Structures are given as structure tokens and as C-alpha cells.
Length: 164
Image (cartoon, rainbow, N blue to C red; front, side):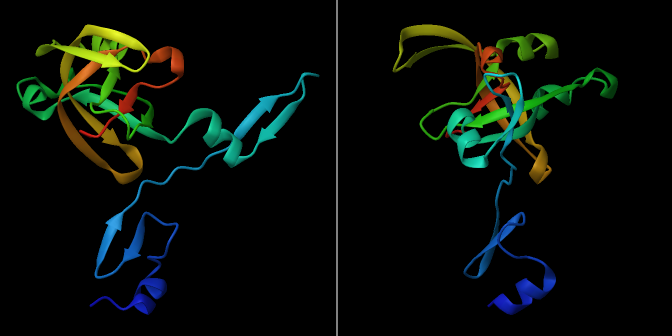
């Protein structure tokens, strides 16, 4: 049994990358929200965290790279990653990556998948084998069939669905 006082003394307290949930420690994803905007007179104004979260959603810093099963066949110098923001979307079944990121990484589609969203009829999209690296956790997760989508105009490179 883990003593909660030991956690506090060791620095493992809520708000840090771990939290106490009984006998085990579970990593949490941390991200600071907030920013600056411009008011109607052109002055910079702070955006409070709750407003920023409402405007942008739960965003984390990620890096997209080739999945391990693809990268292992390439020389180290040909392996690259692209970093940016990922939006956590618990309503999405699948993880998506920006098509432009897939092209820059030189990814080849492994499948063509039929997709539909609440706002669009069914359409076809390429699926790519990628690894999504969560920078704050120093951990990457292979997603064998991340769906290619137009995400750049939303300021994100990945939409992290339930298969992430």
C-alpha cells in the first residue's frame, strides 16, 4: 500500500505528472492553458484559462513520426518527426493526422478507409502508420491506421481519438 504522506514528501502530488488513485500511480497529461488576444482597439489582452479551453479544447503538444514497424527499415538519418498541437477528442473513434504532415514525413498509405462525421457524408480517406509522441509524458504510441484529414486550418496536426 502506498502511503499518501510519502507521495507528498516525495513531490508526487496532484497537479504534477502523476496523481494518487489508490494503490497505483497513473500518469496524467498536463498542459498550461491561456494566452493573449487582441481587443477591438488593437491592445493585447490576456485570455484566461477557462476561456482558452472553451475556444480551443483540450490541446497537448505532440510529435508525429513514422510508426516503429515502418521506421525500423530506414536509416536513422531518414527518420524525422513534426511537432505541433494535438486535440484530444473522446468523441472520435479514430486518431487523425494532418494530410500535410503525412506528406512531409513521406508516409505511404496502408489503407483507404470510409469515414463519416456528424457534419459530412461518408467519404474515403488514406490511413497511415504513425507514432504519436506525447511530449509532456515522453511517451509515444503507435497508431497503425491514423486517418489523413485537413487539420492544419484548425491549428492542430493531430486529432487524438479513442484508439490513441
